Image 1 (cartoon, one colour):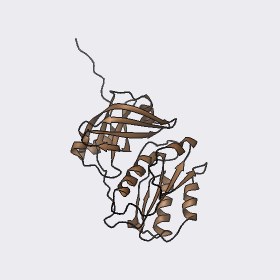
Image 2 (cartoon, rainbow, N blue to C red):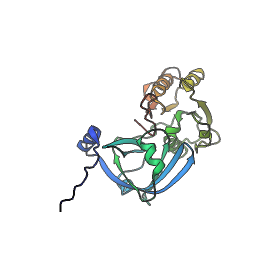
Image 3 (cartoon, rainbow, N blue to C red):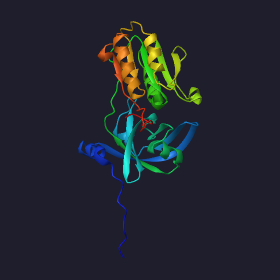
Image 4 (cartoon, rainbow, N blue to C red):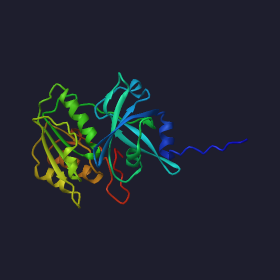
Length: 258
């Protein structure tokens, strides 16, 4: 008797490129799911050997693959509390329409998902900044927290830090932002135009020479904020690290880096 085996969903051209670049693949196993708010989930994983092969660094991220129809789609997520000795970490999902959020809402203990490691690299500046200017939102919360942890563990943990956090849902105020007592945190409602956070940052501009900027929000906002920090805050091109995390448009990408 011949048994028909359904073909595995394709990773498309992105998967082909990653394979050509010899990116590392790992099989992750779900060990728990936490509902943080109605719009935010944390999924815990056994790492399948990932952390034994790759050194942890601030804002470290991996690509997860999610099936939808006959395709697999990748989304990039920052590791939360990676622990190499136990081979565990978590990933956080801002809930919206899309294959990643849909998978997270139905994830169960024992379920497996494929992960690829390629492209993640970040380190604090060699010279300790005089302060930090950080802009993020729910989609980049894990990366913001990872960065704040690295600053706290650095040789200059008590420098001024300003964090602008854009929000869309009122329950985002309860998200676990790991700010310290001396950090200044401004929550900014996105609104219909999506420009409020850019307008606030523009209005507060000052000569921040010697500071370091870090930006991870919606694509247009990220570009606008990055330009402001480089020019009106006088950080220059090398003084700002930026990475769009989602696209606001007819086809929204919203769970992690794009």
